[in-house]
Length: 530
Image 1 (cartoon, one colour):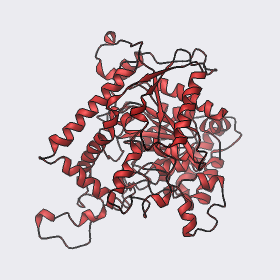
Image 2 (cartoon, rainbow, N blue to C red; image 1 turned 120 degrees about the vertical axis):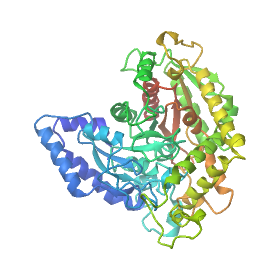
Image 3 (cartoon, rainbow, N blue to C red; image 1 turned 180 degrees about the vertical axis):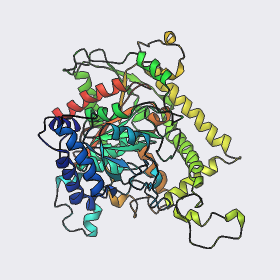
Image 4 (cartoon, one colour; image 1 turned 135 degrees about the horizontal axis):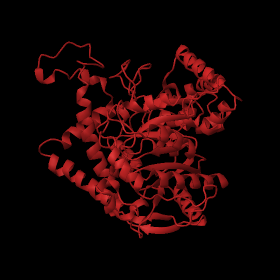
């Protein structure tokens, strides 16, 4: 299935296809590929789907549409609360847990007519790098690749990435038209790059987190995975609303200030003319990390040259605090995670050990914690350590200072001012020497091989240093997460050495999704022209 949301919606409106046909097509591909890809934890039951399909087709027959996504099958990462399907977060701890309500973004999409096809697979509680999902790229382009599922063939498989790998793989394999994921430090953008789809992380607070099971509250962002940038914008336009249920939702006042700020708009929307756009390229010492593969560097250069060929000015910039981003991210994210996961005590909900209670009150919940996997336990321990009295000032506070420095770096290089820093609209000033957008790679390599990851495909390897090495995969995505700025992974070709997809990352100032998506559309066309 290669149809986009835009194409499917037009066919529905022209009555050239039915919602039943779209859903049937998605279910057919799930049946065909999911046993090999492992993209879904749960697929919506047929009765629920049939009810939604009949409602949609009945509306279409009358020429009525309730929204831009009416009749479009969409999947959700299994940490978005849904009332009709369990929300397990890929864990034993929440196995069979069913939420009494939907996440706000799920409600927004359903109000626009979207149909939930199922819940996608993920690392346990979103804590992982490689994930439990297989990359569908080789399966789709070489159907005989796994003809005999022996150990030799399994080793040829590659990961879809973590932690939103299920959502990325489902979109790449045509099992749905779009999927929601969560991006804490690159969990949408990395799988998107590995699987060859678009992965969009809006500004922090743009989309409601209410009903999203938390990993790290100050970093978690609702992310969007689609086949095209235009499809990502369609989803974004539906879910980027203020939500009073979410205390971190961008306030109406900030949204008003932000909308008054200028964004880059092409003089003619029908052309790829980027004259007047300033594209920033970070210094080699900041994003040319030693682990970066040569094929990715070459495609990065091609992406830069293509934007310049369309009239954009290329400007070297410096974000010196970037080199500290990865260390700061893992201190902050793990600290918040250890606090968030304290709620899983086996008393109120979730897994409860069947072992007899320990007589020692200090170990009352120790047996219940066996419900956590190895990687989650590791992160709880590391996060708890950084919050202890002896480590708080040396680690947590220092990481917070680095985070502020990274935010300041971005504010300094962007032309557009940060709307969070201003109260009155008349105080806003445009820096003509700044840039409109930054372009960097998304990942340091193409999708890693299963044999180079964990034996369980969920955590990381046996060597005690393996998990530290695995965290390096996030090095190019965490700066945008720490600053809360919008970023997007756009597929820009495949590696000549292994044939797997490579994505390029664009970043803009906080709140400037308009510029980001405009430039991403042009970059996407450049990839298609090659």
